[in-house]
Image (cartoon, rainbow, N blue to C red; front, side):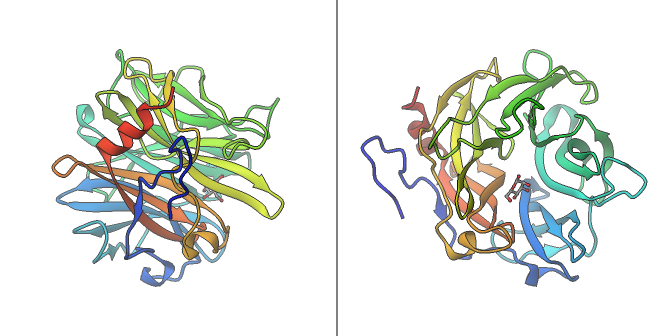
Length: 319
Ligand code: BMA
């Protein structure tokens, strides 16, 4: 449902698929608690989702699901692609929220995920060519840091990783920063990119990057989550941002309002009610459509489509 306003900020750009939720715990070949926050990729003519599963101990792992059209006919792997490592302090409590980027230069997919251990969540990377096996690069940012996504190519000779460190001075308002690297292993000190707005704003409490941003002629199109704290709990919604193509730390456009928020019943209930948490975005160059994959209520996976040109037009009206 659109909520029209004078500035168009709430325009209905994203359309929920009628098959939503497209993946739930009932689709899993083994017992799980919840299925959410998937990374997305085109691979071998199919859509691959790298789904976060919370098991019945409370720990998370990442498992692959494949579908011919990205909506129906999912085939779920019988075991995880990435899981907790009891011998590794950074991931002994599991792995969460993998965002996938295909990097043509490396001819590989890079998975940026949250490794979780006693020191807190931190950003880790792994690569895969086939979604059957992975090469782990391990933790690349110290805790507490999460919500990382890599750009698909170097900018001025360096790979660029958005991530969300928590400052020890202001632990209540985590924000998006970025780091740069020539080899995906050694990263520069974080540079601030995007902070929550203050007071009553829908994204005042925290913001984090969603899926890996997509390159457009106007800039890098990013989707982010923003949180508002209500007496009944937090509300996670979705906003749009455009980063400068040559200077991806520079925000050139940002929607004032959210473009998607929890409305459907599968978004307003669940283990964490009122959460729409986008982690996968695929662009179909032939049709110009975008598919946004997201966790709903931290319990199931849903998808919404949009038209890339419409999304960019909408975003470009805001300074
Ligand atoms: C964030 C992350 C996500 C989760 C979201 C809503 O901080 O932990 O994994 O989906 O909160 O609970």
